[in-house]
Structures are given as structure tokens and as C-alpha cells.
Length: 126
Image (cartoon, rainbow, N blue to C red; front, side):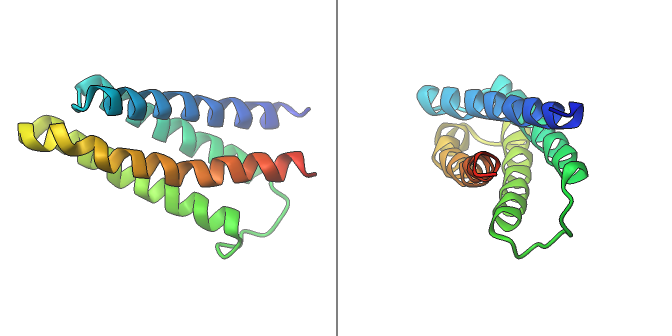
């Protein structure tokens, strides 16, 4: 297996680990903590890095309308909004918002799982 392929799989898996830890620990705590936001940022950065590595591997012409590409891009943008909003909530938000933030977070995670699982399916079907 080429090194870039291994690297992309490791990076995307690290994104899954960090983002899931942040999302689920926040969900169980029902309160947004600074270390959750750190996990969100790490998940996003690993996801962007892994996505870029996969882009370098791809031999196809970039087509935003392909379902995997479209859901992946949508998930990245929603993750970016989520992590920026979480950072704002931690630095300047109210206690009320910190207690309710987990309601939004779980939806972002579920959206992110669509391209993650879709990518696994596409890789295994080749």
C-alpha cells in the first residue's frame, strides 16, 4: 500500500477519534468544556489533512457533484462552523448556551459520518 494512502487513512481515522471523543464526551457531560473544543479543532485539522492527502491520491477529475465529494465538502464546512461557534461559546458565550450546545454537536457528527462511512464503503468496494 502506498505511503500516501496509509497516511490519508491514519489522518482520517485520527479525525474520527478526536471528533468523536469531543462530540460524545460533550454529549454525556451536557456541557461544553474547553477540552471538547480542542478535540473538535484536532478532528477538523486531521480531517482537512486526510482529505487533502486523499485528493492527492485521486486520479479522478474533481467533481463537486459526486455524492461522496458533495457530502464531504458539506461536512467539512459544517464542522468549521461548529468549531468556530464552539470556540466563541467557550470564550464569550453564556452558561445557557454552553449547556445546550451538545444538541447541535451531535447533528454535525452524524452529518460527518455520512462521508466517512461512504468513503469506507467506496474504498472496500474497489
